[in-house]
Image 1 (cartoon, one colour):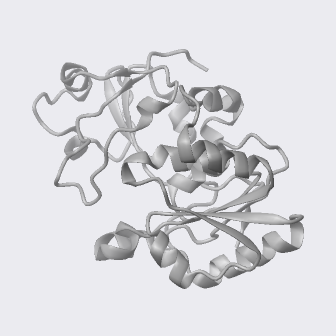
Image 2 (spheres, helix red, strand yellow):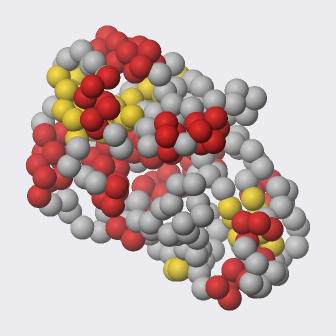
Length: 266
């Protein structure tokens, strides 16, 4: 742990040119980070007034004021040699980057306020049973041909096999279904056993779904960072996490350590 100051560049949120526009939602967590100012980004990018995402090289550079873009989707040991004064752009979605500080990361992603209303009610239902979160990611994955060609969507066969795996190994599971398209889930996903569809949180309350996912005992995730983090934030050492072995539609991409070793790949 370096104890370096963390600043978050929020300048691209709300950009209508993004294929999947996003709003900043991390403010609900207790993350100890400041918001980067334009001058902070310009200072490090050395190209004031130009989009940092257009400039970032697909390699790491060695000087003290630089930018680093994720080069691939598996662990890159060179990250540990980056300076503190650096812009980092990417998913960095391998547990190997932060496994040694996992408790601190979970602390940073704790919620500032307790759940209320329907979320508090569903949290109580989850706590009262052997809950399994099941996430179906559709949205741009299914609707945008370009995004679809990159990511793909998990098949119904994957969910059938994942549910059967869970039923064989988890006592009296109750499946809590999360999705950005709950109507599609109701119409197409036939889950054997006890099922609850969580559909009361809209697109502006995604963090509440993430909180509920993380409170489940076990998880069936999609090829999505959203449910990846929902499962990872669950501190239960005995949790069963079932994930799709094929993370991207493009099978040439190396995702060998994108999923923690203890997770089941189907």
